[in-house]
Image 1 (cartoon, rainbow, N blue to C red):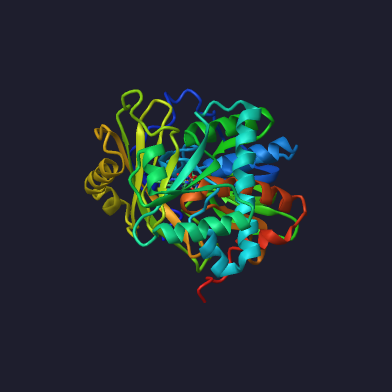
Image 2 (tube, rainbow, N blue to C red):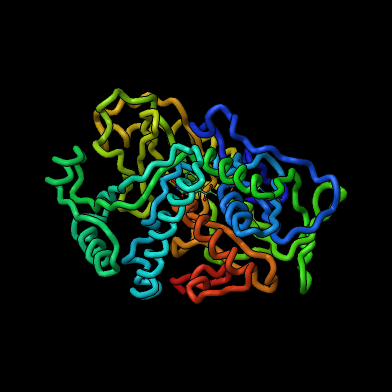
Length: 413
Ligand SMILES: Cc1cc2nc3c(=O)[nH]c(=O)nc-3n(C[C@H](O)[C@H](O)[C@H](O)COP(=O)(O)OP(=O)(O)OC[C@H]3O[C@@H](n4cnc5c(N)ncnc54)[C@H](O)[C@@H]3O)c2cc1C
């Protein structure tokens, strides 16, 4: 576990990622110069807090965001920002855990979340290199053509889009030499830092406060929550949303969550016409998978090589070896690539036993709500969290929200 009071943004990632442009779109942050009251206090100004704040502000809620460092420069800056509706657990695995109906419903909510995010970015005109993308889910390791066919059939039964490709189709249409793949529309990619900053700026334009402060203690009372900060002042809120990323306060306990590490590289811009045909998001159908995407300036990003390292220094020490492995994987996947590396980075990564996020009230503290979207779909889940938690703050509850309960047991139990 990452220690909540001492884990800084610098511990959440190392190296350098390609995001944020020249930093011009960074939102302005104010100091906490007096105690204040607000309807909803969002703790954490990464992509999760940004989505929550923007949505609440758009609904006319009085919202305050606090971050103890620079908004966006935590895990969000390390993300590879593949915005997929396909989640880390296949529909088959999720069906094994929770039954077909519930699993299919979750997948459909995930499709709706990416659609919602696309509509939001377009509607607000957020300048964040957002591009609708298809995905190629390619066979790897144990997951060969028959596993992909089973998954594809289950997805069709759930009403999800996608096309099964055999080796010949995949090679002739995409130039990728794997035994099979599922090609699916409806995902996207973006610059996660520009996305987060754009949403925060939009929230600010609608009246949200963005404050530089560290929350040090939470006091949950029947009608409100009062938080202490590292300064002289307190903030009182009707609800608090915890969007602190992989650094969870001690009182948020989940038996199904663990922290790991992940690595990524971005190549130099490739020569025009040498990338795969539709710049699809490519990911492997294996438990710990590698994945690849492109960027608007023609780079290839390839990431993965996940392991259970938690110590930030050890994680960063592994960066040269992990980067070299990722470059090798790229050469195997796409031999035409120029594998010269321009950016190389690492990050803390959270996982749960069922691949689903932790969203909802903290047990015993009904006014404190968690928004922890873990795994390779962190951003899709953050979008879901923003919608679910806004409903909960407004006193509306739907049955499917409980799927993400933070005290749910492991499905393996
Ligand atoms: C290498 C890598 C690749 C990834 N790839 C993808 C991907 O392709 N697609 C995808 O969807 N997801 C991906 N993810 C996951 C995704 O990036 C994360 O889920 C997401 O960035 C988490 O955002 P966040 O806002 O919750 O956390 P953060 O960005 O870490 O923000 C949390 C903020 O809370 C602040 N904070 C913490 N404690 C306090 C406190 N006590 N008081 C005040 N402020 C506090 C921190 O300063 C920080 O700014 C990836 C992650 C990594 C590391």
